[in-house]
Image 1 (spheres, helix red, strand yellow):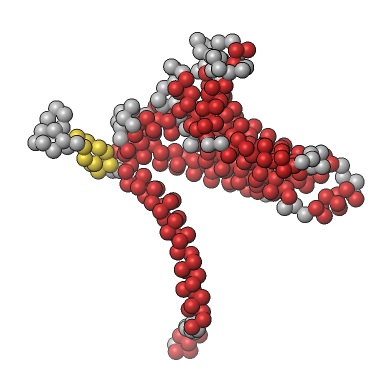
Image 2: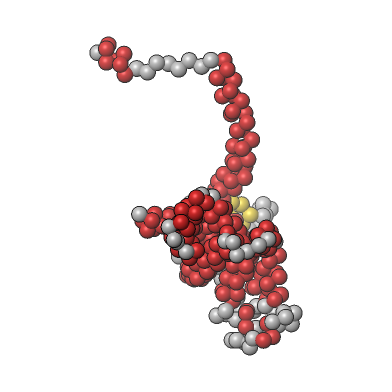
Length: 320
């Protein structure tokens, strides 16, 4: 028994003074990162989850909740009630359906366009690549809300240079009609984020060893075969990243409907879930307050997580 114990016991690791000093220095250098990570990423999530479990109610009694002189509102723990209310609201799922339709159409178009631009910039056909790369990326440097305002003005016939060429539809300007507005938003999003995704693909393309191209040319491969048989397959991991980021971004669709809502009279406060969460937090929807709004946001985060994981496994299965 004593032999077995001696065999299974591990020798104690003895730390030298230099090793301890290096370990302490490493943790000290890492501490700012962990603090920033906790403050910037973990704390808001914990705060949102906590807020989603509470609901604001009028303090005191009486018709306006001011009996007894307490006044104001208090947070009352309601458990999962906010999630149940949001999850059983048909308007919430209508908004989810619009976002899903938006993503199914817009993401493939944007990713395909970004890949095509990256392949073009990586080829010998384009000169002054830095200028073109900066030009394509420039829309991403414009804040999303400002970009939405710019396109909002371009959709209004009174100030747009091209909206007059399109007929009114359903009693609204063409780009603001109920059946077109979702695709007007898709155009705004594609304009903003195509350059960003192009840079992801371009970085992956430039990481491919040039020897592969030379070997393929010696074997008689044309430029089209090099593109379709070497370049595109080797940027599949970049495509996975770009699509995952696009899924997360689509779920957060907020700037575009917020701006277009101010230019129309028909768009409901529940047009997209993020718009619904904002209007709930500002009291324009019932139940209102930070609790119900946080519950909507967390439900959308869960949906985004499920979609991202499903796409990841589907992509891995296709690659196998």
